[in-house]
Image 1: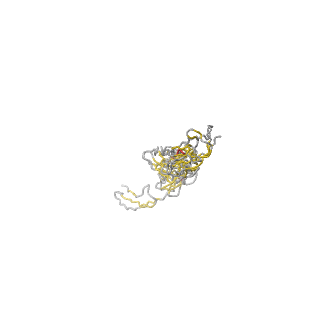
Image 2: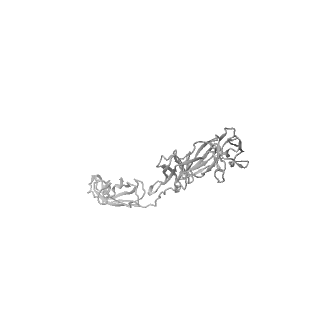
Image 3: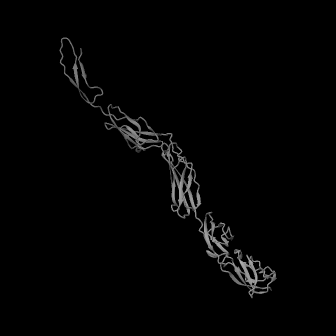
Length: 425
């Protein structure tokens, strides 16, 4: 039987010294003495890597920074070598800065967008544990993904507002408000570029697609403010989406007329006086019905002859259609000053001074008028005189001359006295 030599070394064993053990020889008439030997393995010359590979060279758009693209591996004739991987400059290294390497993994260094760029070029180096290298260019493609793009919220257009100044809260209805996509919420804000016009400005949040703007004018303000209403949903702007809608409109406060009323005879007049009230500040005027109005209901000037204390009221409208009401109070004094008698009669049938006229006597229907001649004889008397006496007595003409009259107004106050001259030629 032949001897057997054995060692622990294999074809893949590292360089070094390994024992060789001999045993098992058998022969008749022989005895054996065994001497063990050694096996020395020396390292062969290191070979450079011949290829570097990526398990995958594409990535979906809208990724997260740090996402794995592919695993790197190396082809090398030397068994047992280890490798490190780096991105290096050179041909094809244009987009190296957009990627990172962690161990043997190529990872995204940015969020990719297919619509912006569809592919990237990198240069990858593998280095074995003996320091030998191999470099290769790779094209990393970006896959187009069917993206969800947020749509802008909706709201109906808002009409411009023009109104006359008035205190108090005013409202504007907002309609058609929607985030469009299901499950989203909206937030509404409002602002003005003319803060001096408005004392308050606010908006409610949408309910059922509707909201309300509330505002009030600053005291006696006039002018125009541009109002901006912003509706924002929570869908974001990823992938070119829109999450904001802006509407603008104007609010105009038209000034009220600045009015005044003047009187041709002041605030106090005698019963029977004709007075002219004049209003200013508008393009049209409407006087309210009141005692003693003679004419001018729809003009700036109103002629009045009040019989008692009266407040006159006029509505003044300006060019923008705004109006305001102004009042003027007149005190009427029952002092008989407006009762005036003509002092000459010429009863000749020519229609001029044919009757004795006592102006405003009709204001005192209980009057008693008496006329006397120079001798003190009563030539005429009339209860409730109405300007009809024609200078006759019992149907016969009175002689020319001067006569004396007394007017008793029937109110217990002072009587009015004076002279009247009758002229026949």
